[in-house]
Image (cartoon, rainbow, N blue to C red; front, side, top):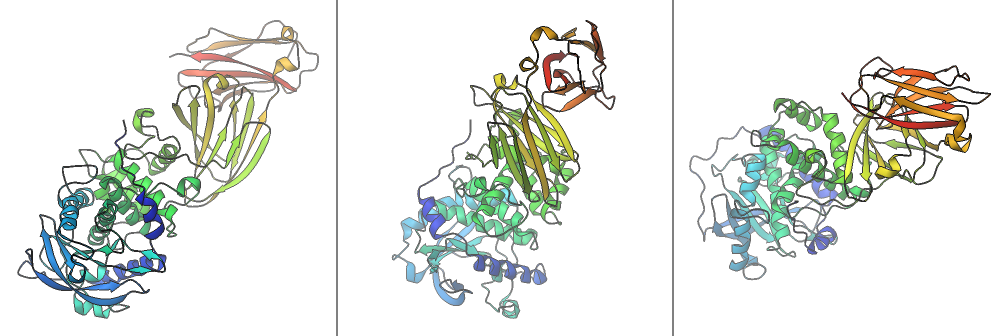
Amino acid sequence: MKKTIIFLFILITFVMSAVPIPEFDAFHREISRQTAQWQGTHSPNENSREYVIGDIHVYWSWDLSVMPPLWIQTPATCRAVGEFCYVFVADDQWNVHMDQDDVDLVFNYLENETLNSTEYGAVEMDINLFGPVPDELDNDPKVIVFYSELGSFMGTSFDGYFSAYNQVTEAQAQQMNPSGHSNECEMIYMTCSPLNPTDPIRISVLAHELQHMIHWGADVNEETWLNEGCSELAMVYFGLPDPIINFPSQPDNQLNVWNQEFADYVKVMLFFTYLEEHFTTIENEFILDIVWDATNGLQSIIDQLIENGFAIPFEAVFLNWTIANFIDDPTCEQGQYGYELLDLPNFYTVGSHTSFPVSRTGTVQPWATDYIRVFPNGANIEHDITINNAYQSIGLIKRLNDVDEYEVEGFTVNGAWTGYIPPEWNDLYYYVVYVYANHSNSSINYSYNLEEVVSAVNDLPESEIILSNYPNPFNPSTTISFQLNTETPENTELVIYNLKGQKIRTFSNLQITQSPDQQIVWDGTDDSGKAVSSGVYFYKLKSGNFEISKKMLLMK
């Protein structure tokens, strides 16, 4: 059973009023990169800077009503002290937009519990997931959470932010472009106006921003999509993730490219939640290892799959993730195609076909996906695929009739592929979905053709067609017997398919005679001579404009 995530209606307000501003985020990322030159060069203060309730300090912060933001100084008082953080509130906001009851409520989420757990608060949760909070200058491991009036810009209000200026000295901050100011401590800025500071979504955003601080200490030059993915994962684990919108309607969205769209936040949230749920175990800390990996982007994930002993290649991880996005079924295939912490909406299909013939072309961006759905409807369908990429994996999702369950398989297209959707699938599956998950660094172009093949019984009387195999089930070989009473056999062949619809073995240019007992022995191997696995296979006799198919079972 899935764990329950609380989605509040106020998320709609968050989406509309607190969506990130591209200029602000780009500005912040540039500042973080500039601080890298001084990272790790500081000698922390000899004396730890510890605060007690009632202490007063004047902090530098940003006036976010303009872009780029302007610097202001704000007196603030310490209102709570915990094991992991201090809570400071701007004096001009005290008992105006925030009071002691508000502080107690947010402090409980910071230190003691999240919406998903009573074992830890948001700060400790991030430390467990991503690693220790940096302690660059002040010799104090605690984070300062500073509540003030952050303001709004062009109708957009801000939940909170992390500023890398605070990770360098005041003198170094003055040397940056643009020059700035530093409080020389680990600090997260949070709103108490115009947004409600006690709304749990604010703490979820704080967990998001705290991850950025931790990632600054671990890998300041990390690629944006990966950094943001970890921050989105923090919101999932707190219990208030971003709403899963936009990306499901446009899954052809390159995973490792950041365009600052809301769909980008959702795609990386799903990807890192999938990684955390399927690859973090009691023996490893997979996400933490990625955060602290010296390489960046996809390479850091590839490195940590190897480092943590996973035999699965990253390309297969990506394909499995795209399948999980479509079916989200934790009960399928030992749970590898589902989520425990999230419930996903339906994903968009670029094609959904119920009648044939149909032909389409398409393009998929690198590390992105197209989904093609086919309803068999009892038809006998030949499926041809052409892709301008060698050894492109295709996922095959089969939705069972009458029950909300799935079977998942896959196959490889090496330039061109011909498959088969047999009429028998109509009794088993409501629909099938072909998952074009582009696991390469270049776009792929594809085309496909779905064509109903007229059954033999529509062309010749049944008395003139005989097709069977014996023994059935069989191991290791079976004899396929056939008789085709026609005067003009043309291009006659016998083709064997597996349940995925892939051609396994082809017997071409058969010489048809009037003999009542024409036979072919199939030894259970494919066209390359390799033995195939146990399972159901279809064999189809094709001649001229008609064909007939039967089913057989190989049992080893």
